[in-house]
Image 1 (cartoon, helix red, strand yellow):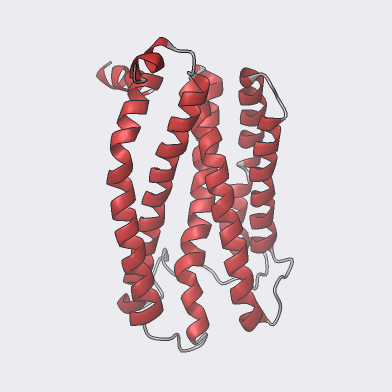
Image 2 (cartoon, helix red, strand yellow):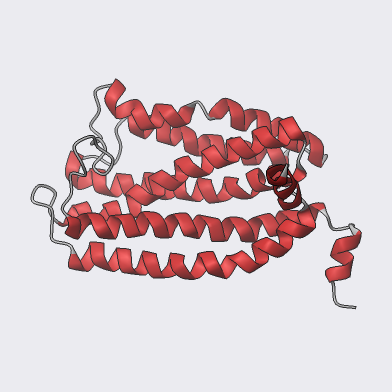
Amino acid sequence: MATWTWFHKLSSPPHFYRIAGKMIPWYAIPAALLIVAGIYGGLVAAPADYQQGEAFRIIYVHAPSAWLSLMCYTTMAVAAAVGLIWRIKLAHALAAATAPIGASFALLCLVTGSLWGRPMWGTWWVWDGRLTSQLILFFLYLGYMALRSAYDDLQRADRASAVLALVGVVNVPIIHFSVYWWNSLHQGSTVIRKDGPAMPPSMLVPLLMCFAGFTLLYAALACVRVRAEVLNRERNATWLKELSPS
């Protein structure tokens, strides 16, 4: 009962708006520190890879971007499901706020992957299972945002886009397992492996810092964007008028 009460309180727009505002610096400052430290460790301190040379360093942006593109879509789909099932407006706000963030990470993943692929594969793009499914993920983000903007009625936009998010979430495991299901030019996992990471600590630690930093960056951006969504949805609410300076 206490857990449900806490969840119900958190889903209240006024309560979440205040909590999110307080949490932004707690996410943003560690995110900045971790990303700067991780990028420095990866681009400057880490040794060159014995096979890929200096080109491997793009992994410190590419891999966290790929992870966030999947995490954001999963978050968006879960929030859409919560919004559909329990009719919680804040869940739809979270899904709407997450979409452009996830699309940005998906685009960054595709661009950095192409930059790495040119010297490694001799081409900017191949219709590989991992690359193709990642491109589809980017289009799913664009489709979700376009579908939302196609409706003037906010409730209809929430429902229609939520259905699309739930249908598209099947692509997330496809992206993850594509390198194992099909013959792929894309390398497999180098961090999460049964026999341990395939990277020495000098390379692995900066990468993990980038993963953590990018994840906290998403949290900070999500708080900012959800607050903006709440302002738009609750612009005529009494509690919001009370927050405005007289």
